[in-house]
Image (cartoon, rainbow, N blue to C red):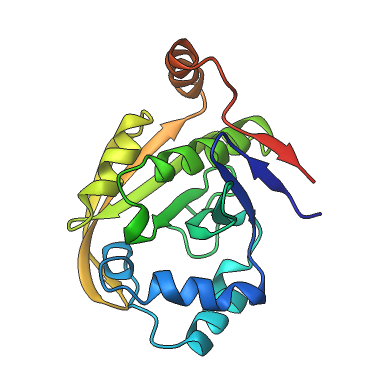
Length: 195
């Protein structure tokens, strides 16, 4: 079953191989990937391989602008494999937004939708988020949503070298507090699930 999440300004939908060109346009920018621990894409063919081997996984979504249907980034929940938690009830959230779309709150909007899904549909007990030293934007997004710093791994090897990785956690019991604060501001659900 393909799940599509619909937020106020975004559509979160599964990736397809047809997205390779749009992915390449965003992921080839050296300001995007290295901050997340991956090297910039060098070709559309490489983006197609990343789609097939990484992004077309369960709970991995292309972040699409509603008004233009343009892909602007990615948000995902990673369970067990390739996460440091090794617990399917405590996935790790990952997100990135293409540089032309920074500063508009899209990363937080997409993340809120998928975190809400993690707690209220997938019955997760916690969601973890990580960021590297040179990615203060991710720290700010996670902190605004109530993630709390837990620990730092001083040397994590990625395709771009060794980095300090900071780990933050949001538990299911703290999520309603965040939702209540946000509801007071806007009074809208984070996302509507479409199938």
